[in-house]
Length: 177
Image (cartoon, rainbow, N blue to C red):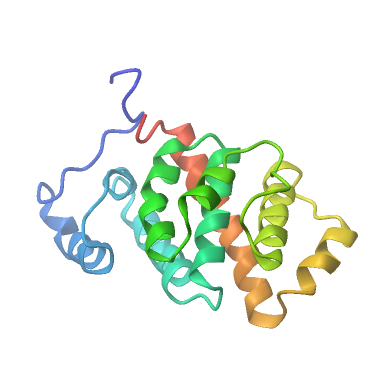
């Protein structure tokens, strides 16, 4: 395997009849079977569970789409997962996130003058804490709760956690490098 390609060979769609139904579900939900899903199809149960979880996070979340996409971009930056970042820029743009706000997610530390709302900024600070330190300080969590409660709070934390899983798998398996 090429040192710059995935560490696990992707499953080319249409080459394994036993996966045809699963590939169709992925295609219906996502519009294509991306390189990530081609790698995941090496384990059909993982690919299935992954699709269920990530579809819930992306498509059934109570979070505003701009917040969801900004934290996904930030996690990708922090975990050095350019494939994930590049995959979500169009989603962020479609959600109305402007170029300056997208670019600001790349900065270390988060820039004070970024064009984010207070709710977006605190969500990004949460993404930083969860991704870098895992533990979230009480003072930060209290600031998060000023903007997000109940389902929105859980959806925010789950989004950061889920995309840490995504980016870490991508990086470990060199998907998209």
